[in-house]
Structures are given as structure tokens and as C-alpha cells.
Image (cartoon, rainbow, N blue to C red):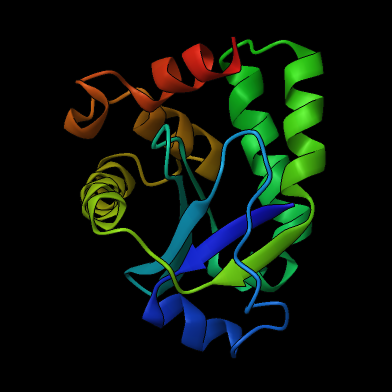
Length: 160
């Protein structure tokens, strides 16, 4: 089971989800943070892992089906990085069961805001980019909270 820590904007979008009082996360990667951002008339959800800053973007309308969409998108991005199938399968199972909380961390929120700015730039520069490819690009950018490693590198190290 994975905990997704929702920002106020995301929490309101979810409508105070059930199972939100339990905040124990026993997954391999730990908690994720989620927020919503807008680009033109489109709404997106951004989910960032607290330990590795691994980030995926999904359509905001899919957030109610997060247990289905979220693990699939994470798996697609990990496939692009050639992560072994066994590691992806273990993560997929853990990400399929989610609970929501409001315990967001400021440092992760700061990184998410940077990812949102980068996402808007990429969406403007490459209008037909898929959300998987957008997530791949975000995960390849160096981040100071993880010693200037990319989230991709941090995830690969973490899964070893």
C-alpha cells in the first residue's frame, strides 16, 4: 500500500477521500506527493516520490482512478529507463493500492513546483508530447535535494 500526500488543491479535488486517516506507508519507495496544475484548458495531476523525486504526470480526470492509472504510468516510465520487469512488478503491486493523506513535505512541494514549471515549458515547446514522455523528461533532470542526481538515477540506485 502506498500513501499519496495530497496538497489542499488535490484534496479538494478528491473530495476528502475515504481511508485518509491512516498514514502508514509500508511500500518500498515510501510516500508520494500529489498536486494539480493547469496548462491552458487542460488539468494535470503531478505525483512525486518523496525519496527519489521520481515524478509522473497523469490527466487530472484520472485521479479518481489513481489506483489503476498511477501504477501503469510509473511502470511505463520505468520501462523507458529499462528497469527490470521483476522490480517493476513489485512496485506495480504496491502502487495499485493507495491511501490519501494531507501530510505534504515542503521540500518535495518545492521540487514539485519546479517540475510544474518545467512541464509547462515542455508542453509549450512540444505540444504533442505524451504524458509518459513528459514524465521521462522530468525524471532526467538533476535536482539539488538529491545531490544533483536525476530522479531516474535516484530510482535506479534505490531499486538496487
